Length: 288
Image (cartoon, rainbow, N blue to C red; front, side, top):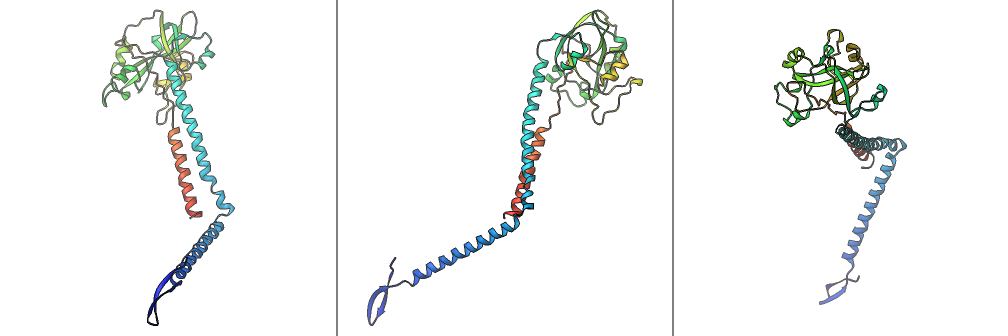
């Protein structure tokens, strides 16, 4: 590009080529580019010095945490599917109770039909116990301090002699508030053959902060089927009577609570957060 400027020469105003300003601008820009290149080169050199094998090895932490987050995501989907399957299984049509007790182990949360008679003289109560039936849920879970709340009742466990056999299993007849325990135990009993529908259950692990069972004192806090069976002369098999709103003044059936532990959501949040935080720390230390 050719630039001109006006100057006064020997009394005349004359236009002559002028490159001084243009040359100055070019020189300034070139200097800036050189400085930027030098700065970039120094930064690259600094990063290269930082990126040693040991620093690259630290990338394993965010990568591993991210992988664990992906794994927990898959576990969450699996657990939610399992819970949905068990809830659906509880609602399916009842099947005949198996004649072989070893087959019962594969029927957890399955609805079954059984004929036989209750042996009330060996009945006992697990307390305190929560209430989980449909009627209770429809009432809005009860109120704090209400006698229908979970800390004010127990489950009545009654041995049940299966018709045509000498096999005795245990039946959770349902929940009653504490003030009705004595009344229920003093009632006149019906020892006739009956047909019941119930949900097959398995033994429980003792929950944290829950006392040990004391069979010798007939004090029960959780469902240990081996202990319970030995105490009342039954097989280590337990079923929960289904909920029947027509029954009044009796233990309330339907106390099957599908409460599988599902911490996978909190775990995946933890792992993804750890991955993001450690990756940011690595970037700040080695790439900035």
